[in-house]
Amino acid sequence: MNTPLEPLRLPANQPAQFYRGGEAIAALRGGDVLDFGPEDWVASTTTLYGKDTEGLTRLPDGRWLRDAVAADPIGWLGEPHLAAYGVSTALLVKLLDAGQRLPVHFHPDNGFAERHFDSHFGKTEAWIVVGTHGEDPTVHAGFRETHSKDAIGEWVRDQDAPAMLGALNSIPVRAGDTVYIPSGLPHAIGAGVFVVELQQPTDFSLTIEWRDFLANPERGHLGIGFDTALDALDTTGWDPERLGSIVKHTAASTESTVDLLAAGSGPFFRAERLSPGDKPLRLDPGFAVLVVLDGAGSLRSGDREQPLGKGDTFVIPHAAGELELEGTLTAIRCRPPAPGAHGH
Image (cartoon, rainbow, N blue to C red):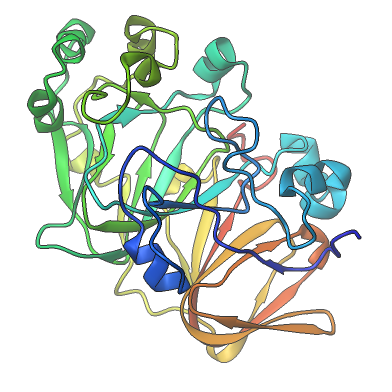
């Protein structure tokens, strides 16, 4: 049985991680809280680093989404996307609920990933904050001042966590805030922050603060050594003005369609908050991931209508054509870069 190319509701997909969390995912989706299940990989054709199938999304008909896309790339992705990015969806979406602070880490760009990991994609990412709990929900991004590679190398050798975290900008966040994380930027998500995360479709995390999080330093540098890994790190200072170029505050925006991410993210992915209200929204054709945050409504594809409710996640193939979203609901539509955006 082949899955018809129409929007498909997906079950939760929570591969085991090294850190705790996931209560907000369970509350949104109505499932159980899993031990070490702080991430739900939505419409994933990406595996956990070094794994064969962990992390992949399984479709309702039992196939891996990765295999379904490979079998019908034009139907799933469309010819312009295929010409620009090949048979990759060029996107990984996660629900990420940090039950504890994540370690200080960073991700390689496309060129570094190609040289060291034989991958066309690095791991640029962005966070859409959809909920917070606790007294001081905070994320950390970018060094406040420029540091030498040697000084950072000493922190890594000594596993000086206070120095590493203390060197980063602390950014208080609330629902509606978004943070674009370019490749190379050191960062950490604080406890109590729940995000919809968009990223390039890889699992390359270079974790300089590995002690108390990872089993060994090799898992921090992914086998290439920290000296090499640090070549991919942005060691420059990010002052408030520069930080302002990657942070957006969208909570006050009341339009039915709100572009969520900072301008520089366009070559890597796109995200909009959709709130149809009284008037249905028409969605142009294209591969997409839809996450329903609250409310109820429906998604119409041709003569087929599917109900939507809080916590639903859908994968939408290009061949589903133009869609109509209606109802009193709030959803986030995540998409790969537009063909020709040159994030690849």
